[in-house]
Image 1 (cartoon, rainbow, N blue to C red):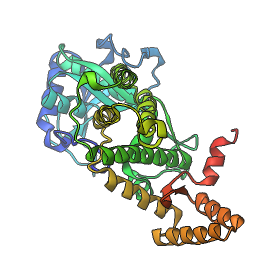
Image 2: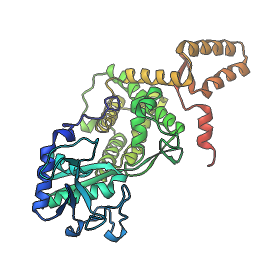
Image 3: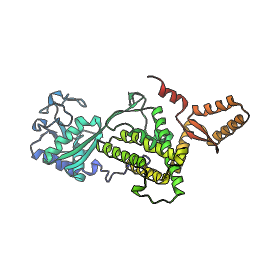
Image 4: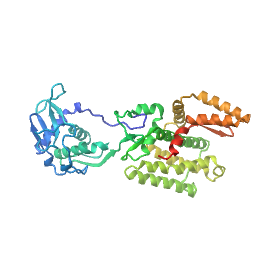
Length: 401
């Protein structure tokens, strides 16, 4: 989570440390008439809660009882769910007013969120598979315990698919974040995830991760080049000192950022809108016209600032551009199964081939490196390399499905 720039939670409570709060909440639900006891078990009576189904949109008659376990004939309604389960041999248990047992699947979340956040709070999150029954049951039991209970926003993220198939252990296409960031930079993975709206399913594939790695290298390389130029110039920027077209570019990106993030966190829109200020920076840095533009340094300062601010909010601002670029290069070399010394040797061979007008050999060396995701860039100062999407995957991107 640290590698992925995720902020740490304020609390990480354990169910076993909150058994008193759980038992107290079950008592409240019973006292308010929303639950009943049977032989050491306590069940929520969904017939007593007419709003049941308001989150998922499901009606009681649509519910299939026993999706997880066999139907208990002792229940008043087959869809009633357990608040407390009596102890079974070999299972862990805690003492309670209803005898030894353990909490149901849902009650622990209601009790712990109430303990730390109160009965009403802003945001409750989880995977889309938790909408029903888990979150539906949370709403019911929390409202039954306290009629002031309310969640302002429910945030449900979509599933991850792998090459368009749902990720699962049974299909053998299951892997962990640790495995992904062994070959790809964590911020490339973060960019990839933000490239799809969080509520939508996201398709994981090698070509998608390579594209994200390529894109984030471009972002940080642009900002690194900009930082180098700005470090040589100490300019105090005034609002009225920026050219009109640059001011429009900055304001437009800021407006898109605010409206997109205010509209259910539309991160893909923000990332797409970042292209324009990045392109403008590159034009100012590298084109003949850009280098001659009036108030160039002031323009670069304003553009770099707005991009940096947005990246900070998105959790994608590295401590050092040069450091993260080096890390991205190292990951690319690892994926290519080649060392930097080998790449530099290939560059020397290609330079010699070009000098000797052996252009076929020169092109072959460039292509061999491109196949494994190493792009060569020629300039007046010589040849350098950067990570790129491997040639085969580029062709895969272009080929029709």
